[in-house]
View (cartoon, rainbow, N blue to C red):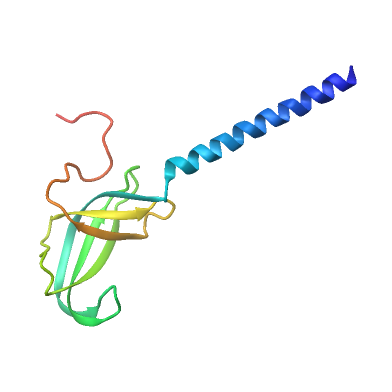
Length: 130
């Protein structure tokens, strides 16, 4: 009788462990590389200023500040980027941009580029708005 109880308890422990491992593996597959993209809005364009680009070189730049919300409703967060004046794309206030951010630390973000057709700013609304 004692043997049956011990084997049954051990089987239950194995079953719970298997369920936990399956949840962890499914979560890793779902999150992928840990980077999500969302829409952001340019809140400030400052320049021309003498600054350092992402590559480390010093040049005349525009400083772009973008406000964004995560896809899970967190925010607003801000991210800044220095772009060279000679850049073909010009940014103005209220332009839409793509912001890519780390899921675990949404304040670590970077401006991925300008876009004009992104339909929504901020988190997705569960109820359609009129």
